[in-house]
Length: 116
Image (tube, rainbow, N blue to C red):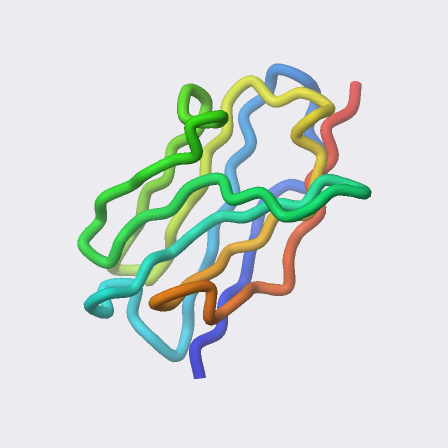
């Protein structure tokens, strides 16, 4: 069974860069047809898709976050990574890594708080 686990800092200050890593086990991030996404949920709000990277390594991003977001992968470690620049309090959210041919597999989520 495919399992995903997020890791990264839980507390950031405004203007810093958020970096989260998702480690995938039980399956390969190069599985044909799979996509690996980052999704977040701010307090009291719905889910927001941030971006994804395909099984072939092509990233694509939400238009609202594109200017600040980068998603990359390390196939040797079966990991993919999110970087979000210039964070503000508006980026406070639970962040999930998600994968599969759709949103089949979810990590447990990690809380990221931006506060001075």
